[in-house]
Amino acid sequence: MSDQVTIFDTTLRDGEQAPGISLDVAEKLEIAEQLSRLGVDIIEAGFPVASVGEFEAVQAIARSVGGPVIAGLSRTQRADVDRCWEAVRDADRARIHIFISTSPSHMEHMLKMTAAQVVAETRSGVSRAREHTTDVEFSPQDATRTPLDFMLEVLQTAVEAGATTLNIPDTVGYGIPWDFGDLIAHVRKSIPGDYVISTHCHNDLGLAVANSLAGVKAGARQVEVCVNGLGERAGNAALEEVVMALAIRPDQFDGLGTAVRSEELAKTSRLVSRLTGYPLQYNKAVVGRNAFAHESGIHQHGVLAERSTYEIIDAASVGQQGSQIVLGKHSGRHAFGDTLAKMGLSIHGDALNSAFTRFKELADRKVTLTEADLEAIVAEELGTSVEAEFALESLEVVGGTVGVPRASVVVSRAGTKSEATAEGDGMIDAACQAIRAATGVEGSLTGFNVSSVTGGVDALGDVVVQLQAGELRVSGRGVSTDVVEASARAYLNATNRVVRALARNERRRTEVGP
Image (cartoon, one colour):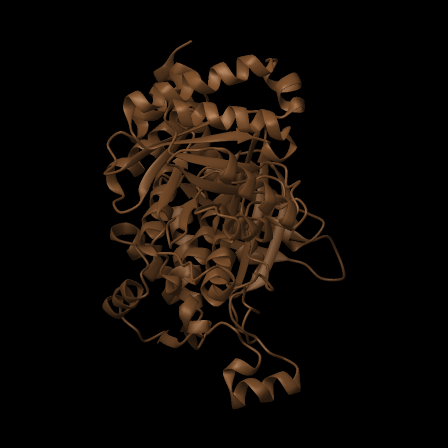
């Protein structure tokens, strides 16, 4: 049995299924490249048959991201398997991940299949995948609510058909650690063959990481995870928590480790947070801003005397060093670009020029800017510069305890300016209403989150919004020392995402035909 746990990252597939997340190809590539630097073993790049855009993203990752195995998800149908292989085949190492539901509830209400039909589909799908590649994973969806004897029959069928990894998904987060561990041990004992056992745990009861670790303890040697615990409903097992639990407590796992470069964890977490628009909770284990913060006097005294008194993880080991003051209003373009490069922030050409202009604007209001400030500026620029439809030229708001809040905006599109004035329930609402009028893009604000990037009265405000436009739900981000301006920028960022999504959908409709 392997002395290392394989880390299978499904942020770009299962993680992206979280409500409101809609990543384009460039954003998925950026995350995949960072996952490669992080050292994950396998990247599940997506579900190629889901849409033309999904296929294009998986194919782009397979063709350009080296290092990890690139996997695609597929149902058992022959056409799905072939489409999946077409998407991943150009990877240095490719995997097809076959799944089918096996619980009574899923078979009756979703598949409309009998047990015998599910077994036959399993054999057919895995066999077809093996015609393309020797690296085939199989998952019986909703395994923890599947009768044990039937699940074993399906798994045995998958192994006989050529599956090299058997993944046990706790699809609805139903498992309890000791029970889930027993299940993994039973599979290992009952199914002969040369294969890897894997776990895929959801967090509906807050036990995804605990269940994953119980699986490792029982013999699983692959763990499926998402950065920041993203995923449907309550999310998936968090990559950073699983990795650090194995690193900090090898005594509990027979010395098992991972190939993950833990010093890249914080950077990866921040990247995924800004591209998905999902803010990171302050008290998030390992990568949250409070993970290494101490307010209690006793705790502060202990940590100052000896870090290990109250910290079991060295902040530097996960890339959580404190932000350093790096630039000010007198810094030039070269120093700005060089600093971003040293921070590992990839931005070039017009986007770099726009980010530098934005940096100078903010530096005039803020004496110094930290690495966290620079990350926020780049995050905003990357979210608005690619195919941007509208740019904010000016914003003026009037509010207070007397009168109705009012905002006036000027936005530009392809060199043409438009302006609008609107009233609202507050200054932020008025600004959003004015942007809606100026752009002509309808949408309703369904989520709003504001946080400070750093401390102090001149701290940058980082605003993330969720915008619903018909069936589209997108996120937007904006930063500024003025929270109203940051909110307006976030709303306009989301508006641009709506415009881009509609344009992509129209192009694909034209390409595919009626």
